[in-house]
Amino acid sequence: MSIKLILFYLIGFGILYLEPIPIAGMTFGILWKLVLIFILAIPILYQTFKYKYMEMFAFIIILFAFKTLVSYSSMEYILTTLTIFIKTLMLPILYLFFVLKVKRETLLFLAKHYSILIILSFVPYILGLLVPLGQGYDLSAYGLDGQYGLVGPFLNPHSASISLAFAMIVISSLVNLKNSKITNIFYVLLIVLGFYELVGTYVRTGLAIYLMALMFIYLNNINIKKMMLLIVTATVLAGVSFYLISSSEVAQMRFEDKNKYMTESDVGSGRFQFWKAAVENWLNDDSSVIWIGLGEEYAKDKMEESVGLRIFAHNEFFQTLQQEGLIGFSLFIVFLFLMQKFLKRNKNASHYLTAQALFVGLIVMMSLQGGFYFNIVFLLSIYFALLKIEFLEKNLEDIRVVNER
Image (cartoon, rainbow, N blue to C red; front, side, top):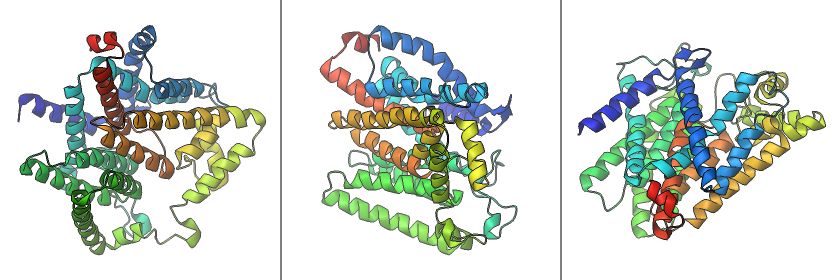
């Protein structure tokens, strides 16, 4: 292992470990990402518009970012509004930066090793060598007062589970016949470890994301070899799941959607109730809110009035409708439609399958949880940039862009 690779893992783990630490009213993880995107935004957008070089999905999400500056609560909660604005810019800015400034080999290095880093970063916590700074899933509802699920270096169990799922999608896509047997064995062991960690978070969203994306990878252009690989993978993961769930009553209760407080109407951790409340909050307000939205803070206030919890809607589509109104929701749907259109246009590219699998994972995550987690955006931006770079190199659409890289 080279010094460069060792430094990457040491620095990467150090940043992940420090991310939950609070600084100036926000966590270090949020702070450094906001600063990074703010620094990159102006020069990257200037260069992009100067050369009239912009994918439509990136342009629409930039418009959506500016829309987040205008909502019912935006002027009262300025810091929250600016934070949402910069976080929304993460995907287009990172995508454009990777296309314009980063070489293909570097992007592949980052995608692979960052995914490995996410999976391996849980190991010191599993072994009890480190105490997590974030808080895992509270297991008190399952009779284990004062005990929590695995969270690793992440702030909360959902970011841990979802980050793991997307890292595992990347690693799963790297398993192929071109690799040496040792390499493929290493990747499979990583997947098994990641699956163990996913179950240990007690968050079902990550499992749903990974399994749906994995099905897409294997069922795309299905053949005998892929079918055999799917059967072997399903058998291994089913075996790991059976062992973990059968050896833990808490895990069994969690994945059967039961706890000591739950009623039959609470299926899905109350998600159906949250979704219904978000839509009703939006519909039952005045016309200005219907068009421009409540904003994040007022949306959470309304959720507290409706369901007794100051929370998000646990669905990005309903949350966007409530938070950003019909204007923002329309831009958001167009953005996702254009992302899918971009993928279809690059269906023959080398990294299409991984990019599409990550997009499938994104849709599953938005449907069951919501939010724009940095690790998702980072990996999506890399693979969308790889598609665009391959297109530019093959078609020489814009010589200036290729030369400047």
